[in-house]
Image 1 (cartoon, rainbow, N blue to C red):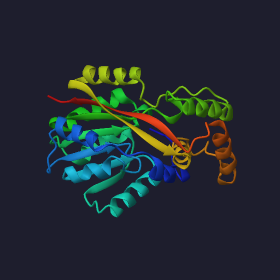
Image 2: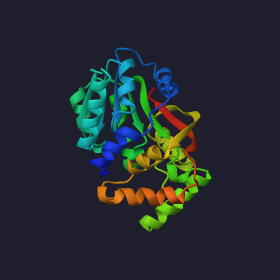
Image 3: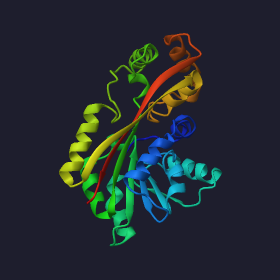
Image 4: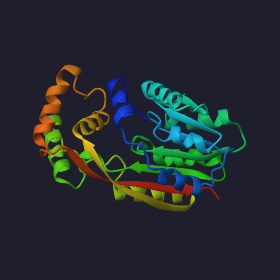
Length: 264
């Protein structure tokens, strides 16, 4: 898992990436029967949008990410919120076997959650390598936190996509693992490698973004080597603003899809 979301991109990620509704945390807790003695792994944890709120529901959370800047900001977020039971580990999906060796022989994980990051990973290998690490009833949760801003079904989203495609000179079609075909592929793989009771639950809501929030969220999704340098960002933002409908706020319909599978 090599992404390149470091430096300013990580800062934008920490500030502007949306969090997860409480209903998502409730669904995870219910499905895996989480209790205060449990240990969970947030793989590809980013700046802690899932790991930090999950920490209040379990004994300990391991947040694992390949970007040091992401982990630094996740640690800072945890400290600000008084979370002391989160451990931040530099690593990618390919490091899961080594993590298993550190955890010891007895299966101990109640859950591994992957939030909006599985498209960067070798998901079939990952699902298989995680299997022996789970306690009874433990398993995997793959959480897609809404469709990318430039792929939504709205006039402003279509205008944004057209402007970005002109700027980057490429067609933007990647769904970041949020498309129905991606979710079906992940579900079939979970079943094929031995997970049971594979199911999906969805939490839907509407949200409104200011232009600052929209552009900040967009910057959080651009790899560091493609992000406009600071001196060019005002002009880049002006070009986006001119392309969009002249509205103060931009309404998006967010569907958080939670794909679940557990060991027997």
